[in-house]
Length: 295
Image 1 (cartoon, rainbow, N blue to C red):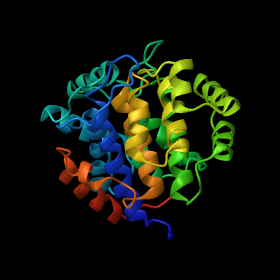
Image 2 (image 1 turned 135 degrees about the vertical axis):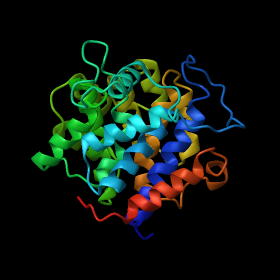
Image 3 (image 1 turned 90 degrees about the vertical axis):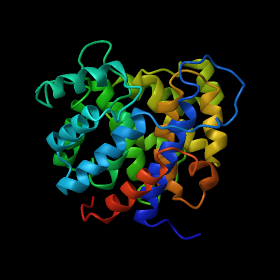
Image 4 (image 1 turned 30 degrees about the horizontal axis):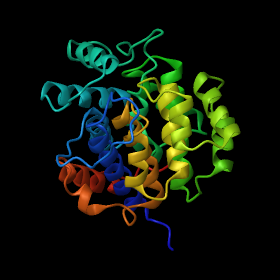
């Protein structure tokens, strides 16, 4: 089977991410449960909205620029286009709207290691190479807009590295997981990924052993594990949802990786076409795929 094109990987990434977000949002905060049915109404939340805003900013600026991305976030925030905003991201957007500097408004402290950077970071993998120092710093700066926290940044970096791996045509497997562990700094995120690597656990095993929460140490390893085990996007979203917790963000991050790996050909288009923002996602992906920024 031929490899997906760059354009198809971008469209697949954004559509599968939106699918995970729209399905998972109906179950967010629920305890672990075997109950699952695809909801009749599929609406995206801040996970997809801030990802799309990031893409729009890159298209408009023809570069990854944290100030431009922050300004784009504020435009969406003022237009009330962002829903279900997490506490750390809401703090940042409120302060940006009041004139705060993008590098200073991000949440800090013990309780700021949330998913708000990792959930929107996927598009950067199509533009930046984390092995290049300047690109690596740019990834950190884009995270900083909402989260000035090392764990939040490292979780986002793990997502970018996962994305880069599949964009280059590589398989998601145990060897890949070992490579991710070796490529991110010492952190709780890394420790959790080591635990996953050394245990050969399933998605349900992860849910039983660890939380599936808004804490990036819980969420990012689960999203990566789900991508490694997945052969069907809807089945995997169901397994994530059944772990409970931050189901929309974990499902969305999984979807970004999975969609970038397989492109659109393996996605359930009948379900995706029911998402409220599907036209916007498609249009944004098409514009984003035409820009000349390359890793």
